[in-house]
Amino acid sequence: MKVHRLGEKLSSFRIIIIGFLGAILIGAFLLMLPISAQSRQWTSPEHALFTSTSAVCVTGLVVKDTATYWSYFGQGVLLLLIQLGGLGVISVAAVIASVSGRKISLLQRSMLQDSISAHQLGDIVPLTKFIFRIAFLTELAGALLLLPWFCKEFGAGGIWMAVFTSVSAFCNAGFDLMGSRSGAFSSLTYFGGHPGVIIPICLLIIIGGIGFLTWDDVCHHKFRLKRYRMQSKVILLTSLILIVLPGILFFFCDYAGVPLKERICFSLFQAVTPRTAGFNTTDLSLLTGAGRTVFIVLMLVGGSPGSTAGGMKTTTLAVLFANMTAVIRKKKSAEMFGRRVEDGTVRTAGALLMMYLFLALSAACTISLIEGEPLTTCLFETASAVGTVGLSLGMTPSLGLVSHLILMFLMFLGRVGGLTILFAAISTSGVEVSQYPVEKINVG
Image (cartoon, rainbow, N blue to C red; front, side, top):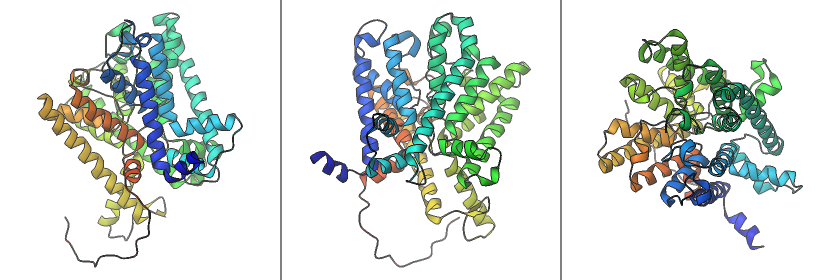
């Protein structure tokens, strides 16, 4: 009875936060154990907690190289945390309950709806099962595509590496096991110009990052785009633009002197990975100033709603652009694909933009003051954390405790969602019955 009353008092947003926090703490405890490290020594609570937070929040920022520090047990724990964080703690719990024959309550359905950003409550359980089928089939296909190349390079150990990399890529986590071959924190630089590895990983990242509601439209309506939800159309178009335009920039600016095959692979991968994937195939410290700026913007944008990715989301960017267009054209409201966008959605998009910019900039300034590092380098790390990306210019492992705590907070907020934390912290009970008088203020 007490548990039931507790569930009624806790909003779905608070339960989602508690679920993610619980998974992080359990993961940190397991990673602290000597069995999780190759040296069979205890891992410090700071490093274990940071790694667990990064895995559950599918970020990829690490303080210990995954391949050379963690044992097979530790890597297995990381894989489970990545899968749990990518699919969502609440979604995993609901599917387990459904498989065991338990009835999904209305409160649990509401939590699922908030967890996967679904529009309707009625079909939430079938949609959740669909999500899991898509996830595991895609991860299996990705592992099979990577298997020949990894086994050729690493022998029988390539099987585990293919599975781990496939799950990490689909969940947009950015954890890799390449450190044993090409050096610690080297990510995928060993396969940087290898199309057989790069293209499957790019596809896994894109499939995981465009959102399961979009894949629901794709599976049901195939190529009949007119029947897609407006959100799916916006996600597909925005994602395409955010891949093509940066890819062209990288092709002509950052990799101009590279042979054509490697140039195409580098440019394509660097256009895909910043939106929360976290892998890299080249030394990011060699990027031009324009390249770093594009990376920071893409990291803040992130993936799409209801996906394994974090960040502000592609739909937020699209709504803001549509609203800007409406203002320029002197229209009353933002419009996309013949549909009007609600004013509340526009306000939410603006709030998200300000929130992510404020968090990234203020955290970067704080870390810069504490560590004595250049502000632009710190901004790259904080944008990577709040966007749950995991890309780094190499400074994360050497940061102090306070800076690590800041990055952990940013990773958690980026995965759970800034508005989820605000809605959980602020009571929304009660109805607004009065409004202040209107007074004009000039902007712009």
